[in-house]
Image (cartoon, rainbow, N blue to C red):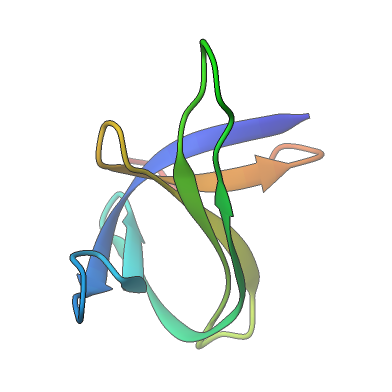
Length: 90
């Protein structure tokens, strides 16, 4: 099971806008990105498609996350898989 939690993301913009994430926020908690360990693009033709970039990241506290950036609506999400995680109070 996969859940998407909308997050605020600060990005590096180089040759294109929002080229890669630098940090993200859940409520008022800031998570600094130490490294991007993988990235991929999703595009599914047809109804219900949501073209998106995915980033597997490691934060400075050595935790791993996946961020999803939907291009069509310009929103960022934290991808949560499996059992639910405890989220800080927003």
